[in-house]
Every structure is written in C-alpha cells, then in structure tokens.
Length: 173
Image (cartoon, one colour):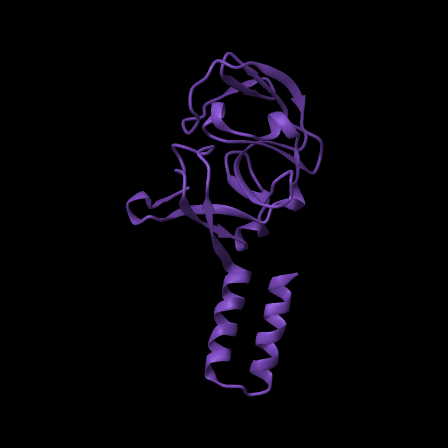
C-alpha cells in the first residue's frame, strides 16, 4: 500500500510541474518497483550462499518466467511481517523426500552443492499445484517449509539474482 501511495504523490508532483527533483525521484522509484530492489538477509539460514546481513538484489522482472527448482526466491514469511529468502526445492506436482541428508525429487537423487550436509530424513511430501516447497541452504539453521508448509507461488515477490553488498561477497546466485 505504501509504495502505491508514494508513487501517486510523486506522480502528482511530476504532472503538476513541481520541478526536476520530483521527476528524478519518480524515475528512480518507478525503476526500483518495476525492475527490482535490494533486500537484506538478517539470518544465517542461507549460509554459505548468502551470509547474515548480506544485501541481495531482488529482481521483479525475473518473475515473468516461472519459478524453477534451485532458484532463491523472496516472499512474505508465515508471520507476514518480514520477507523470507529461501531456495526452491520443489514445485507443484513434485514428490519430495529426504533420506539421510540426500534430497530425492520425484524418486531421483538431486545434487545440492549449495546445501550444508546433514543427516536428516523426512517425507515423502507431495507439493500441491501452484505452490513451492522452500528450504534454507543452512538446513540445520533454517525455519522453512519443513515447519510451516508450502508457499503459494503467487506470494513470491521476486528472485534473488545477485549478492550485491558487501562488495567482497558479490556473486551471481
């Protein structure tokens, strides 16, 4: 709601000729809301891929293509008050199972070079159509779909595409 209000205020200023600053602010605002935005990751649930307090660029444009397994997506968490970023482990129709730390998707073992090795076992879990099963890469330190279930695909606000800050952590996801 707030971004819409800000956008309308900036647009009104632009249309009424309130000056160059409002036009510049409008352009920046429109760019950020249409293309993407930075997002801070305050927890260690995605380590070592994304470290605590790293900033990622959250792409809105990438949402024009379907979400795929292995992508890092951001969405409102189960409490609804903060944004969560997790890796997509399963999409609608997938059957997931973890045996001794090895993930199986639709009966086939999946290599997860980003995931912290573990020995947990769970499942099988069937992912409903239109939903995503998400997990943090640091499995033993992640509050994710194992605890609160699947995420509706249309709740995803963007895909994390790059670790942008600090500069020495920069890398494409």
